[in-house]
Length: 406
Image (cartoon, rainbow, N blue to C red; front, top):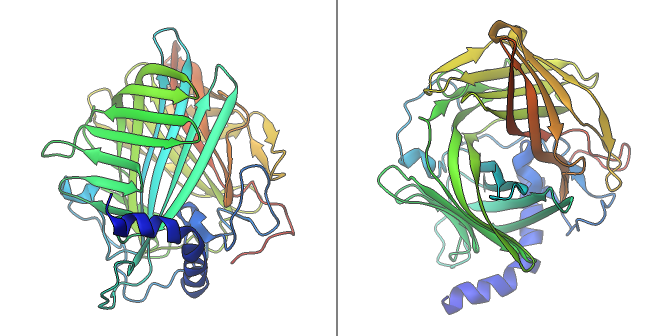
């Protein structure tokens, strides 16, 4: 590590918070990727009144000069694994369910976000000069010990502290990183470590890339340009190690990669969203997301069913029914989250029950949201079926009346 990087790491914690906060106030930010929106440090142990929910962090992003997602585009890989600085926001999202040979189950999440501050960076000679802020979340669900760990970091995209590139594919924030090998950026190696919790995983490509929405254009509301470019790798065979304290486990299983970029904002009536990534034992996957209004009704939704060979079928909103079967209240944020779901796709004769491996998989970081591993049971055309998945819930975690939209 050179002296510039070492010096930057020592300085960034104090300096960067104020820098980010000023940019947040100047620009506003969109949806969950704006977890960096806190203007003071927060700890996982308590949710201060200044902490915001994911949706409360959403604001009107400054779109002038940034490109908008308005029509389907051609995707080129591995280049599109890399950054798209002409758009204001983007993220690299990895989740997975893994087991040891003895049956010990883990879930994990590793996510990187890039937030563009300006589409036209000024010419500057400082090593710290940047037009992008990076933020990352790392979480682990240890079912055997009934423990959930969650961590976050943020940094400027300068001085080697954080960044992304397409060829060879790599995205990193300090020593948390995803690095691709080969001409197509696969396999991908994920590495993250903090406070005695460590993952070192290798993800193969598995099935072909899935273009979500309309050939990769994922609309967020009826407003033109209020959309993202969105693709997924829905069944990535995964092997590696997980360490918790002094206990190291060899694991294998399946991961899911979601990749989006845009210059966008939620519609005026959206208060939160539910996202599901389902990997079934018959070789199929199902992606489903819905935006909710204050009454809890679905105002926008989209879904994709992936067959065992990688073929896709887009699901119309009327084809999917999602019902919560329980509720869990966070002792930290006071948020009341759905906990357990029935997911039905009658046109495909699918009737699934999703049960969290742990009720408490809330990331009570600078923004509170729930994201966790789920076990799947149910039937497909009358035959038993199982699987695993991940669910993300936002807009449930704020203390009402104590925080405000930034």
